[in-house]
Image (cartoon, rainbow, N blue to C red; front, side):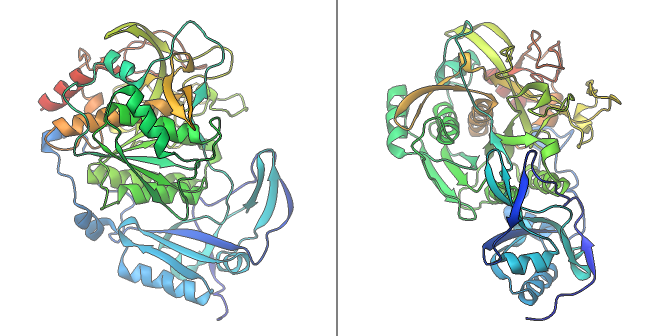
Length: 525
């Protein structure tokens, strides 16, 4: 093996600190195998895809790119890939995968070899939830890769995100609903079943069992959708058998989306709960030319403060890819109110919901009968056991399509930024979704349920519209104030932010009227 090059440059935004409450207990095993994802720059040198958000463009006038066009225009260059391959050979790293369209190269090596290659010290840490392999400080790359490599992920395998689902804590005056009940109350189209569409779902743990899906959809009286599991970086559909574990998230996502759009194909992308696993799952789903999801649901996330800058920028870049390709990304806004589980006394928003290239989904408490809503307010149990996330991003600037609304943070300085969420739907566990997990009936809520609900609705809309809805936000915020596409939520709060007419940082534009939304999108000019 050659000597490593000596001039090193830090990868921007790669700084890490230990997890809160973690302590180092020793060096990582130098022989342990580590898989590392490198994100490369776009071949054209741009940091962002100009015009990918289609702001100001009516749906019928949008021009989405094919996967082949995208790779040619925005993928990684052959020369940059070759430079990384040379670096890998120099440091005794194996090349696991090369994905030019995703700008992603996956390498593998021992702890000893990756530590030398990237100028890091890898240690074992203990924290309240278990142990992880971690690093502190920056990741370093050789001078000739400094402009090529935009991110290095996977050296640190701490759990990056958590699922945003909640079980009921007391009865609270509501009653559980089936996904079909919710769809009726929100007037989802009755003449669309998601036929011809694929719904992608990102999962960072747990799994599903086909016999549970068969039983659930049979009981619901709708066809069982075709469900395919896709392994990313060694992640697998691994049902734990514990209905209170991560299986609850997986089953909730599949059953809600599948009930709304039973004729859609559901592709579930399983990856490890690390920054590398999360990024690789999103990249794989967005650029999947076999299953071709037109909408992707994500119910996992964490407060912006718990991410590295490089990870947020990399994932936001993947969401830009999705917008250029005509793929909608629905993301749960979080279940811990305006603090988002951070105990520093300030307001925080959840990422990836805070990306300006996704449809962030907040939560309500929905009560109704048949097709009539009798009450819908902000989801907040008032006892600290759950409330919809929402607020103002401290990372992402105010997007152009939100410029007409007030998005001022309650934190010192009152900065403006990307407002979260964009839309909402039933999330209170008290009025939660009747599902089946590991052979048992369950009622689960949380904004985790809202992302697949919206994904199912978008699959329905995509079936009926002349082309996929793609990145919806500029279209939704462009609707006139008199539009009946949304039920305005004007009662309640999520802690620091209160509901009010128009957009608010609890429920966004409101919950959907599916049929009215279809009419608005199909007639928009």
